[in-house]
Length: 236
Image (tube, rainbow, N blue to C red; front, side, top):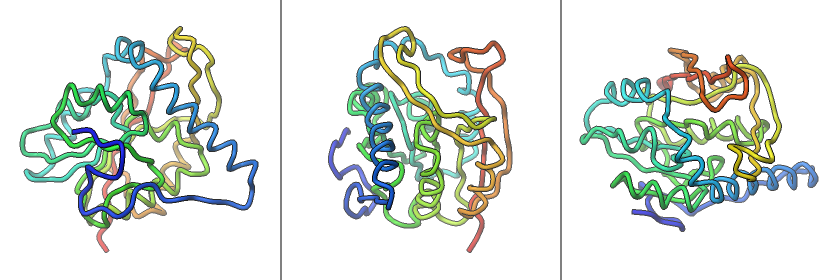
């Protein structure tokens, strides 16, 4: 099921909540980055799908296999449904969220999970109703100064003991590629170094329990790749 509005939720409230700030220029820049990422993934869906043989697939499978039967999982930034929703065990209940309508349409071809269009900084999910969150190659597209807001949302929707698997950069970087995947489509990224990510997780109530570096065939450097952090929400 794909829902481009406010559906596909677990006892959810309203859809996207407005975020604000005193610096109008900064807000405009952030909105421009988000539009670039959304429109980019809409436009390059074919190229991205052909390019991806997710090297983190076995890591995802291990994470999913460790979840208790009946767990509720949010795939935050689910893209085309890989590599999480297409690997779901039958006893895990999932919702996939993305703000690219085209990516969600393609996800619907590989999963029966509920799909909803939404924003990582204002998740359309009720408080304390999720047992696990995956955020693979999604947080890295969110403006860095909003990462803490995303982690606060993860903390809000999860129960004590919930598990989190996310992609993080090793070093801080922000930039764009105007011809990503030789598609002629612009894509933007923004992320802090891994220590800042660890600290943000701690502030949000999560304890990092594992870190794995996974090389990425899409990286421009021969030794390029991403860190995959597993974390657990501390009890209240």
